[in-house]
Structure formats: C-alpha cells, structure tokens
Length: 236
Image 1 (cartoon, rainbow, N blue to C red):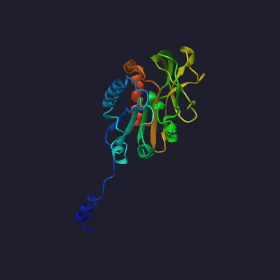
Image 2: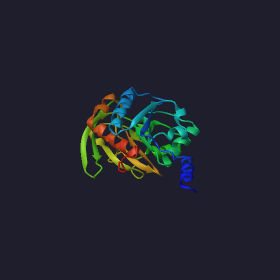
Image 3: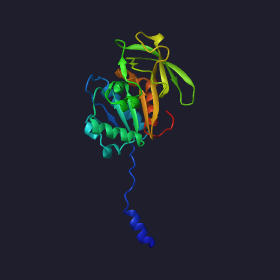
Image 4: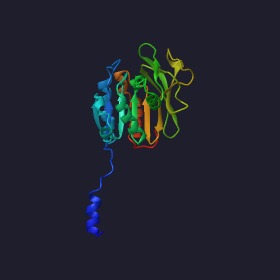
C-alpha cells in the first residue's frame, strides 16, 4: 500500500477510548440525606481543580452506562445512601472500575448498595452504626512514604460491619480510647484503598459534618484520594 493510502486507511480506524480529565461526583440518596453534600461537592471541585480535573456532579443514575462512564477517570460516591443503581447501572460501574477506572467513596458511601456483593468489596466495609452526635477522635494517618502523623477531628465516626484490613491498605485509623461509642476495638480503620483488577478504590469514613471539609488534614487526605482514584498517583 502506498504511504498516502496507508495514512488515509489508518485515519479511518477507530481511536481507542481515552478518559477525559474529568471525574463524576454522584450524590443520589435513597435513605438518609446529609446536609453536607453541597459542601462536599464544592470541596471536591476545588481539590480536583488543583489537580487539573474537571468535576461533573449529578444524581441521575442514568449516567451509569459504559459509554458515559468512559468519559471519566473516576467516579466519586459522596454521601450516597441506600439502593442508588439498578442492575445494568451496577454492571456498568463494575466494568468501569475493573477495566481501569477509579472509585472514591466518602462517608455514607459505606451506607449504600447493601444487596450488591461486589460493591461491598469495592467499598471495603459496609456501615454498621455510629455513636450519637459528633465526637472528637484521635486520628493516626500513615503517609505515602511510611511516616505516620496524628491529628484530631470532630465528626460522626462510623463503626463498620467488618474490619477491612485483610483486604485493603489502611491509610488512617481512629483511636477508640479518644471518644465514646467505638465498637471495633484497638484497630479501627477509617480510611483505606485497594486495587480492583485494573482499577482502584479509595474510601474515607469522614464527611458527615460540613465543617470537616474545611479541615486541612481532611483536605490533604482527599487530595490523596483524588490522585489515586484518578490514576494520577500509583500510591494512595
């Protein structure tokens, strides 16, 4: 084939799908609705913008199709609750993640899709219960380079149905001796990540209270999550 004809033929071949520099923030609720959702979305817009990422925000589950999810680097469930996706939409999210997309869950993302076993593995651990009100807890965070640091945060602290440590990389824990109502014992993970076949999942239990999103430590943690979920960083 002549060079010109070869170039023309190649130009007609379909190009591989490439995710744009965008993430989808999904905030649909079928049970309790957090008042902090607008602040969470605004914070994610700010932090994603710092990383050159655009945010599309919505609550329509019809967005969960293979073609539409292919436009994004990651999907964020920000305080979703209950059964928010039907079976074809679940299949689309699962394929998106397993084929290389990222997932990020905030707080009540663990209070979502209890009847979907794959989601239970994606999120790492489902919500069990929480102590009443907001409490100040001591947080131990493991840095990306192994160093640990401690800080305090006032929020609603979830207890989970299982300790996810055997299946995930734990990034932060809370000290149950520093507040009342913890039920997980000496090892209480609150933020973690894990690979999911070719994709990635990152979750934090923080995010019930609006004020949490102004906390410098939480914002730094969310930056880590966005970088990992979007594929910008191989480390979470």
